[in-house]
Image (cartoon, rainbow, N blue to C red; front, side, top):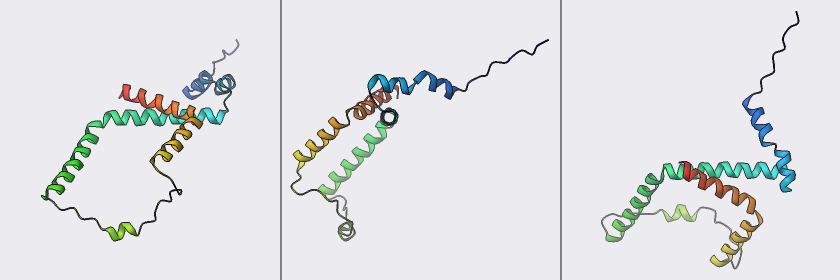
Length: 134
């Protein structure tokens, strides 16, 4: 009698790897494998950000409303908030390029978005899917 061969079972990671076929996708989209991995990471980060934002939106709202309430109470003179300006002035300043204003910063941000469009799009898709799922 001959021994029956037992088929090798693949793990779930190997199955997912075969289904995704990153090399095939990267050739179709003319993207490098590293760029696809980067887009996947940003998709995951966006999903987590959207999911956590949806789950903890009420807590975030409570914190924001509490801070607004503290500022109003301070303005009305019911409480006193003091800031140790000596410690703050001892911190290292953030270097901003000369002549930078809000409009210039937005244009730099917009250029970054256009340069990294695929990454921004994958983060945005992940964020909105996370909001929907959360």
